[in-house]
Length: 198
Image 1 (cartoon, rainbow, N blue to C red):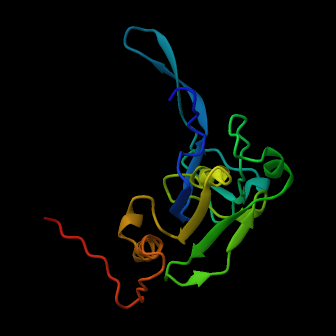
Image 2 (image 1 turned 90 degrees about the vertical axis):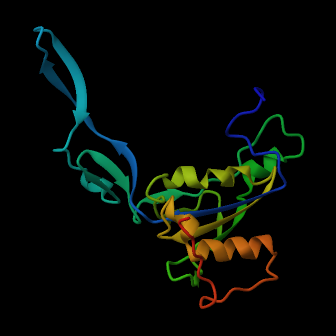
């Protein structure tokens, strides 16, 4: 519908977000103007990546390669919180503004062992992390802004790349646990997703 924004919460009761984190992810680029003479003698301007640029010392949490700026595991990120929606009659706007909202979050290291890092985070908390190698962290965690109109839970998997997460055993464990409401427990030894290439 045209009256809804792409930023609005989806019309569902619960959202379960599972995504990878802590793979350096492109967040910007530095360009410089370059001139090129064409055969017809006209000068035409265009931009090209500035491969000689270096980041200032206060930007040490980022890295730059060939003009591409990447967020890293050391990049400070602010945890997003619920965004008040003026047309949502079921959402208490004053609570969203005055009280930090806790998003149910879990953080998994590569080996699949649960870590207490970011077990429960509040809006405005600062964490050091980056995206999944394709999507920047601030975009991955946008679903946290939906807390209120729907119940949002987030699982972050350390080192799970954007496309490869579908073959990640930790992703499958989290998904099975959610879908079965914890009634099926898969040990690390008995869960090996396999995909045939037929």
